[in-house]
Length: 173
Image (cartoon, rainbow, N blue to C red; front, side):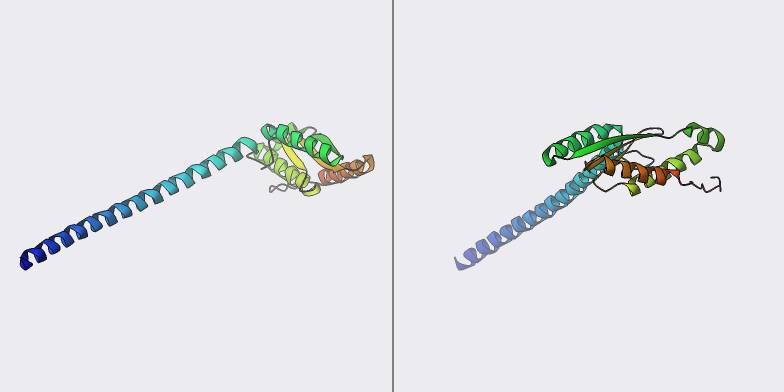
């Protein structure tokens, strides 16, 4: 009887060991599946972010694009209302820009647009928005404008920044 009890205990122990091993294997498989799913989710989130960036920012200059300007305008208006300060909406169109493309090629035109975008961003505050509306048209949303004198100073800084020569890699100015 004692031998049979030992055999039963050994058998039960072996069965439990097999069950535990099976559960450990299932747990490992579940963790591997979880890790794989987490990787896929991270990849999908990254793709979604990339699509959002492409949808709202200009691929050439990195500036906000026409899809984002309405939101930025609305937010600026809401902040102005709350803070009881004004904001300005400025438009810039590059005069005779097509001449650059026609005479020097689209690569040169792209370089000019990138340089202009950098100058506009560098001239304004981080709280302001620079938008590339279309080919050579830009919109600037300047927030927290105190008065006309401040706006005139901003226009002057923009004019100075945009008046400087742009030298292309080809040496053309």
